[in-house]
Length: 389
Image 1: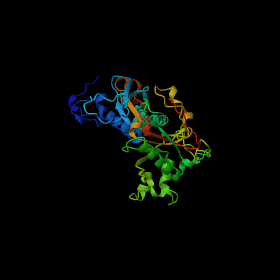
Image 2: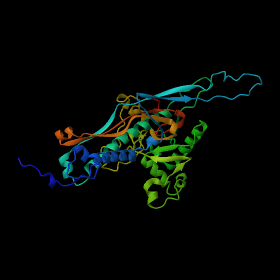
Image 3: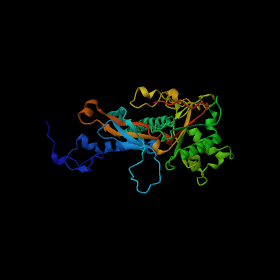
Image 4: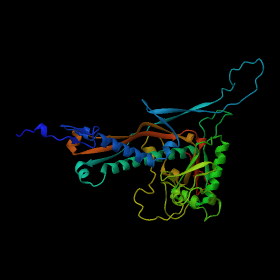
């Protein structure tokens, strides 16, 4: 067997290694891939951050060494005039009343892919980067859907503080329009704006802070507000006149209504689907024509997630008339035991299978906190959707 002459070894450059060169030596597999894995982790997290909007709109806590986290509600109290000489020992009725809410972490949520090393070698594009983004998107989609369902749940709940004479306000449900056999008014700019002002007034009346009020709508509702009524009607006054040209057409022209900042998402409950629902107008549909070739991920059925998770996110039928959410940060909470993370096989496992399993994972749970801070918009019926969970 011929022996290698160590003096002839080149100075290997490994773009994925943490050190740029190693003269006269070689890198282990782990060393060669160190930066690649970090790059992948960054791509996955960017994909997650890009597609999730709910995470920063509600109350978020990190959980360590436990399965659930306790949130405390503190109700209101009264004031009274002091009588000279009388001891001050607290209100005689033991106010303010206190209640608790516990949010438990659901089972581990994962999204994974196996990347064959030869495919990666032959591909002319960044295979891992593309896969990482899609894994991030999948986790973000599920994350937002749970939170939005929890906010809808809040809007249908009474406050947990129910002490006599100290009952706190609960959630709010507002009908968009007046039709009882068609959901088409869910796309009517005037009807939506009226609902926004009703929601703002209700939140004011229930003592909810004006800071951090937001709304999340279906994309077609969002664009209907920008378009207005061909330049007339209430909707015409919602366009941010400082935004021009491409900025306006991008869907960022509507900035707020009644102090409520507006977002759009395909992950909100919308007539029993996620984000959109096609078909003729009916009591449970807005009457939007399918544009065709929408694929299998558009208009996903909501499923009955109370059967597959720890927290109750409601049965699909519970959202048959839901068409938008308006809320403040205190409406719902999310507890994270494991934030969005990446795990990748390496070493002997990679050698045996000639590739790597790339895994994105997340452990979280969401539920309502303060019902008074949540407003559900519904359409197509005069009957408010029933509470659940």
